[in-house]
Every structure is written in C-alpha cells, then in structure tokens.
Image (cartoon, rainbow, N blue to C red; front, side, top):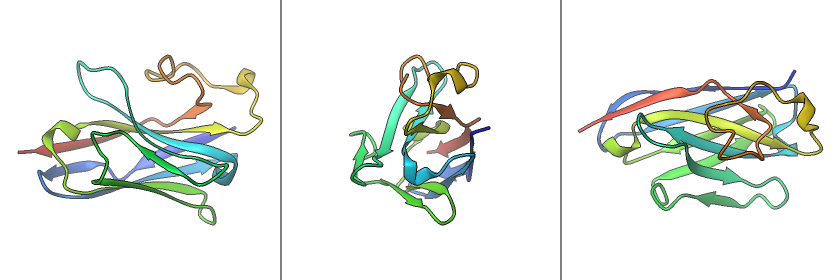
Length: 134
C-alpha cells in the first residue's frame, strides 16, 4: 500500500513560520513528483508547489513564491514545505500528493477532494490544518 502522511500544521500569527512534513510509505519519493496543495473553506483546491522527479526543479504558485520552499529528503523518504511570512489567506488544509513513476491508476485509493482538479496524482494524504491569524 502506498501512503503519504502530512504533519506539522498548526496555528500561527501573520508573519510566522511553519514547516510541513510529508512522510511517504510504499514507494520512494525520488521516484515521484511530489506536490503540495491546499483547500480553504469555500474555495477550490489550489496547487501550491511541485518538486519534479526528473530534473529536481521546483515550481511554485505565484501566491506563495518567495515565501514557501519545498524540499525532499530521499534518505528519510519525505518531503517538506517550509512556509515563512505566513498570511491569513494561507489558512487552509494542506495536502501532499505524489505522482509515482509507472504507478498503475488501478491501484489508486478512493477519490480525494483535490483529485478531480489534479488527476495526475496517485496518492494523497489526509491533510494538515494551517491557521494564520492577523
């Protein structure tokens, strides 16, 4: 079974920082594109960042560029999202997800709130809540 589990969410004041961790199991993170997404109440699922497997490039949404940094530790089989200078509009449930190389779609789990919009991802976590107060 392939899983990813997020941790590290919490409540902070505007301007604060949090570091989210995505711990993978059943596959190697180095064999996948790792993505971070967020879902705020009343909003649609929003892409935050992607770390590409093939070339290690990082991509960020404009809303977080310069404030968030994604990284990966292949030895720990985990991904991270360092979030600095947090703003109230960053409040959301944050999910990590993986597009695993050569993974058959038939092995995917049940649908995720974000999977319709981001259908390439094979596995999603349960999410971790980030609340930023002004």
